[in-house]
Amino acid sequence: MHSPFHPDYNPMIRKMESVFDLSDDERQALQDLPMQVAVIRADQDIVREGDRPSRSCLILSGFACVYKMTAQGKRQIVSFTIAGDIPDLQSLHLKVLDNSVATLSPCRVGFITHEDLHDLCSRYPRITSAFWRETLIDAAIFREWVMNVGRREGVSRMAHVLCELIVRLKAVGLVDDHACDLPITQSEFADALGFTTVHVNRILQQMRADNLIDLKGDRLNVPDWSRLKEVGEFDPTYLHLDNDQAAA
Amino acid sequence: MHSPFHPDYNPMIRKMESVFDLSDDERQALQDLPMQVAVIRADQDIVREGDRPSRSCLILSGFACVYKMTAQGKRQIVSFTIAGDIPDLQSLHLKVLDNSVATLSPCRVGFITHEDLHDLCSRYPRITSAFWRETLIDAAIFREWVMNVGRREGVSRMAHVLCELIVRLKAVGLVDDHACDLPITQSEFADALGFTTVHVNRILQQMRADNLIDLKGDRLNVPDWSRLKEVGEFDPTYLHLDNDQAAA
DNA sequence: CGAAATCTTGAGTATAATCAAAAACGGTGG
DNA sequence: CCACCGTTTTTGATTATACTCAAGATTTCG
Image (cartoon, rainbow over all chains, first blue to last red; front, side):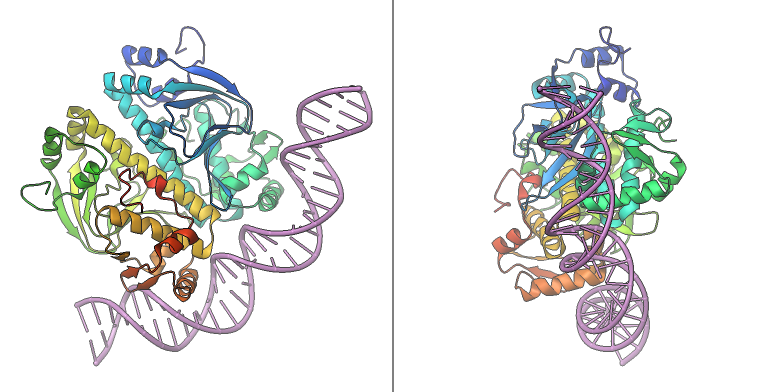
């Protein structure tokens, strides 16, 4: 579609086009952006807290996460990242990384130098805006997570994160009929929700018993989407998807 | 200092200059930015979740906060904002606000139209970068708060937020010798930390008993800064202050 | 001085953590 | 195809952190 060479070459461009009307020039410039592609196996750090990277990473496929560690060695995942996301885009303007990014499943990752990104931004102000906007949505997700972890408990907290994942995955075409791949372990959910693995396990059992979710292995199915949204108090406004096909 | 008319007219410019070398043109353009100034009393919403604002607000003096409400009516404060901050700068690129901003103390607030901000950015790309950077630091603070609320408990969680406040206040010159004004109630701390008011009260008593803080009324004094940092596991990297005078 | 807001206290309860071990699963190699 | 290994999930019992409810003390401010 967007690249003459590879049908779904660049999910970032697709994401941008769902909000923005790119001119031919702008689209071409994005497609011409040099990118070093690597395949990275599961559970590997892509970048680490303290790094001073000279490039950013675009997730082309697979699941990754942004996380931080407390001084006591506890991990907190602060967001999940999926195809089309650039989890360390902030390093374009903040020299030192204050978080790490790790794969959760095998990932295809495209590395783009800051130099090339800066060139692109200086030539196309609307692309600057689009990138800026992406980082603002990341911030909105962090805000929502603060509330989720601070003010929701057990089942509700888990339901909310699942709702977010489904809506975001749907926006990039990775959900079929309320079912999707979800290669996230209970221990990883625990690190995202501020729980222990044991507690996540008990929450999931309860949700299965209530027929809220059908989660087995890497596969999630949602039998009753509106009930899951209700339990998770989920309102997708904060994802700023604009084309509301995904928010339904 | 920065304005010929009013000695500390615009703390935003001071903040920017602590990181960036502004040209005379750029500084002048910032000073000429039209701004409607209002004085707002304590505990008032400045903007509300769901608003579609056509301007952003610069906190000139006083304390405010960014907050969200759960469907069940619980409040979560996701960050404190102080002089020099523009807590809703994201509305420049995200049409609908996904959070509210409220005063905690009486505040002087400057409203700047998005039109003027867009003009400024289109004429001065480096100012675009500076604003973008500000929003990226906001995001870094949200990330840190997710970790704080998700993975630290009691005294440690409270200590961390106090450390952040002190370092940020010091960066804008509002700390004298590890003491500062802090017009934040225990109930507001509770909403920021994901605790109840009662629990915050007990935490503060414990911290006072341990001589970690001297907090009475609106005044905070820190007898032993390095111990408070240690208890709160505080590392200021995520604030990206760059001129590290404040981080000491 | 008096009313409202804020802070404090106590007792009982709930949610989630901890620790330890067993069961189930998924992939690998013989 | 099956046995084996490491990972992930599950279970049970106990403990800890934080919540709830309710009331009383103190502070703030008009």
